[in-house]
Every structure is written in C-alpha cells, then in structure tokens.
Image 1 (cartoon, rainbow over the protein chains, first blue to last red):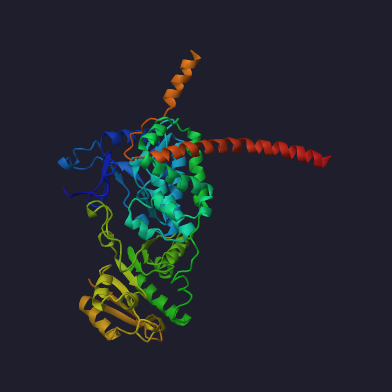
Image 2 (cartoon, rainbow over the protein chains, first blue to last red):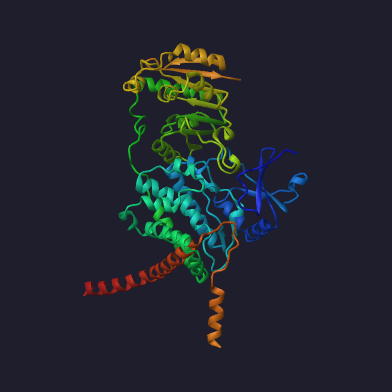
Length: 464
Length: 66
C-alpha cells in the first residue's frame, strides 16, 4: 500500500495528512477525534462546508487496515486541491482576501461556540479565485473566557505582511519566503515611522505587541505573573477584536508604486494587428488541445490566461515575477469568477524546497503537473535579461508541460534593443536558427508563426 | 458569604491554559486583554449610540418643528 505522509503536517500532534492513490486524507488520533466530534455533532462541519468556509470533508472507512495507519482512530478525506500554493507566492489582494476569510470564518464559528486554534496562512488555499480553509483540525470547541490562541500567528502570517506592503511599499513575498512563519512584529515595528504608529491598529498590534514581546524576553517572570493574573476574555471582547481587525484590513490597499511591467499590455512592441494575430494563434492552440491544467509563464495581467479559459482550458496557472501585474490579474479573475490561479515566481529563483527537513514546503518543480504551457515574450528575458544559457532556458521551459508555445524574440526587436542598450550585446549566438536547433533537439516542432514585423515567432512544440 | 462567592467567581474567571499546540505568546495575551476591554467598551457604546442619536434627533427635530 503506497501511503505518503505530508512532511509539513507535523505541528499539531492530533492528526496527520497523508496521500493514498491520489486522495488527500487526514488521520486523527483520540485528541483529534474529540475535536472533530464536537464540530460534527453540532452541525458545524456541514454548515462550514455549505457556507464555503471549509474544504469539503468526509469520514472514510474504505482504507485497508495496515500498520502505518494503526495510530489513527479516524480517517477523513478532503476534496483535492489541484495545486497547493503558499502565502509567499500570493499577491497582496490574495493575502488580504485570505485574512478576511480567516476572520469571517472565526466570526461564523464563534456564534456556534467554536474557534480556530491557529491562524496559519498555509491553512488557506484558493478555488476559483476564492479562499477556502483546508485544516479541519484547526476547529475546536470554544471554552468560555478563552483567549485567541492564534492572534500572534495571525499578526505574523497575515497582518504584518499586509502592513509591510500597504504602508511601506515593500512586497512581503521574499521576506516571507525567508522566514516561513511570516513577518515578525519586531521586524515590522523597527521600520514603521512614528506617524505610522499613531494609527490605532498599528499602535496596538505592532508597537505595543513588540513592547510586550521584548519585555517578555527581558523580564519573563514579571510578564508571566501578569498573564497568570489576567481575567478571562469575554466572547463579546473576542468578537470585537476580530471585527476591529477585519475593518482595519479591509481598509488596506497595495502601495500604488509603478512596476516595470505595469503597463506592458498597453505599451509593448506589437501593433494592434500583430497582437490580434498572436491572440488568434494562441486561441487556436488552446482550442485544439483543451488543457485541464495550463501554465501561463510570464502571464502579466492575465490577458492570455483569460483568453485560454474562454477557449476551453479548464484551469490556468499564471506565473509572473511582477507582483503589481499579478495583483491586477487576480482582481480581474476574482471579478469574473475565473478558474485562474496567480503564482508569484521569480523565474531565476523559483520557490524551492523549504522548511523542516527541506520537505515542509515544496519547490515549484515538485508541485506542478501541467498538460500545456505558453511562454509568451519570456524566453528573451531569461536569456538576455538574466544571462541564462539558451539551451538551459529551453530545457527549463519545456519541462513545465509536454505541449506548449514559446515565443522567440529576435535581436532586431525594440524590446531587446532597449535591454542591451546599456548592457551591450554580449549574446553573439542568440538567434532564431540556434533557438530552433536547440528546441528541435528536445521536442518536436509542431508549427511556427511569425507574429510581428520585427521578427517575433511563436514556436509550438510537443515532447510526447 | 458574598465575599467568598466573589472570590470563587474571580478564581474561576482567571486565565487557564488552553492546551493548544500553538504557543499563543504572553505578549499576545496581555495585548488581547487590553484590546478586548476596548472592544467590549466600543461594542457597548455602539449599542447605545443609536439610541442616544435617536434621542438627539428627536430633540433636534422637535426644536426644528417648533
């Protein structure tokens, strides 16, 4: 029996995630069963699923009885998410929506005498551009007077990264990737100005929190005594705190700094006729193949991703290194309820295996399974912009999917002229003939289409 | 007797360990006690604010009518 335990599912000893024959399962021990029983018997589980707060979950008994599963008293099966993404791969509005989803879920649960015992952003995934909570074991009975155990984690996983981006114009992603538990309050407090700290939420959740965290380090006994002497927290106060945080987060918006690719859809080297031709070729390719999972590498604001969805692609994953355009794509897909998943990816430094034993958060290559891919106006940025050898860039691109389109941009194109204006032309062998030679060695060239007067060509390949 | 009852209620209303796998952190608990009090006061004021506003509008409205 081929059972694979999830290496990231170790924090809560009440249960473990494992995979079996493509199914996502969760084994619960007695502690986990106790928690699950409460939400099941009080109809909280069904209601949470019905209201789209929680991933569809059911009890299963059809697994063979083997030693590996003997530690569990109950096994649950969750609806499978096509592709797991991590908060450091999300754009600003994705993290904001995830934070609001978490708070709304808590408010919903509190009415039913239930709480979330943690506030990990990794417990939220996206289905059809909408956040969904995936960890059933996080739901537990509310004990009158209890404090919000996930508050600190909520600040580090949601609140602080959003403040960092909104108030200071610093994208949280690479910082978050460097510290998987999020942005610490101490780090954030150090870069906030006095004016920032005058805001009610920032004063309490960042400035004062940092003061108490530092005091807890310097005078642990004194702080411990203070905590022991604290009165119970009323439900009204608990709810009030959640509502106050929700109001504050709803008011946050991404810093409007213009990024490199903000206006690419409008300002590129194509004329409108050429762009129409390019769109038609991509649409024909999608209609012909009807991919279940399509990767749009360098998706920008999602123009080709959305066209692909209209032409029959079931789900599109849009990758880009520019968080501003990715945010625009997300907001568009959310508005139109599209099956589009934006993923932040620095193409020369994509997400790698991270965390405990280097297996807790998987790298991009270990999570992706695409049927098709389009890499439009990307190859020259990898080769000319980042000095990646032509052979390696082709090999990396076609590894994404067995079928795809790669756009080749020649040196005569204005975009490359601009890129090499100051850097100089150090790419003697960069030409279409060589690109074609390299691609032919690795895959079958199904078709070529010249799409611009500057000599841009779309290469359709198949490596099957 | 009343004194002992108050002591017993106070004792049981003191914070107890949640036995959660996640350490909530002492700083967070202290902060929540402050924020919780503010939120509770805010919620109470919110409840009465409408009533107070209605009373003011009634008085103001009467004056206007007069």
